[in-house]
Image (cartoon, rainbow, N blue to C red; front, top):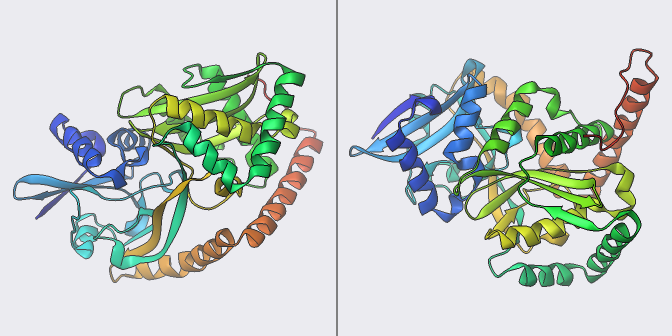
Length: 375
């Protein structure tokens, strides 16, 4: 077995075709974050992106995309931005994990959204969690019946708010796969505002992440595409989402809404309409990602499994990394696994966000803020 490490952009046409072939052959790899297109985009923007090309008997049997940071610290491709990572390989393939790390010049590889059960990483999984999905394989009507069974009261309430929004603010219109840059900018502005209000770090304060989204938005192919959706009331955008899709799977990434319409629950209304549009577009599932919001439990009709874990080789860097990361990972798992603790943590962060917003608005040097929802 031979392992060669290169940058994704250095892969030739035949190698890229082989990557797509391997991904399509295994249903567990049907996720856009595992696609060659995502790896190529990350490589354009980040110097630390690498891919290990694994050959056996003269044939490529696997690709392992990853990030190599200082001191040989390895992270999944896309890190905190992604909800799925793993080895793109022939089914049931296993490579010696320590040999893989050695070839990649890594002292440690820490993962938290690994495709569960991959033979190379399964012995190092410390926790496996369900990632809820909207299963659309039987069509939208079957899925919405499951949502109704999950909570008839919730569905009735949201449908009432949906009608009320259309009646009071203007007829509703849903746009699937918008190519408009101004619509994307509106969504990102809402999301930045949400990060600040809820005490989170604004990811879009990093220009490279915005550029990554722009690159993904421009992708248009049968196997990989960025999908921008927007719900309008009249001519006014009220809620939207940007995600990535393969031929059959859409992954939830950046949902947001205009807070001026919060009383209508536009985000949930949008998700219901997005599921219907996704089914019409031939998608089989919408992956909502593990943990977080309670609405996922209501909208789900199935689940995928993702794993957390860690592989390391004996080194000082690996030891320091373990000391710094393990307590944080355990605390995060405990909080996200318990709805009561998650709600408390969410309230604390939102309180911090309100204080930060107030201090910012009272600063004499604070920039003038555009109206919410401005394009």
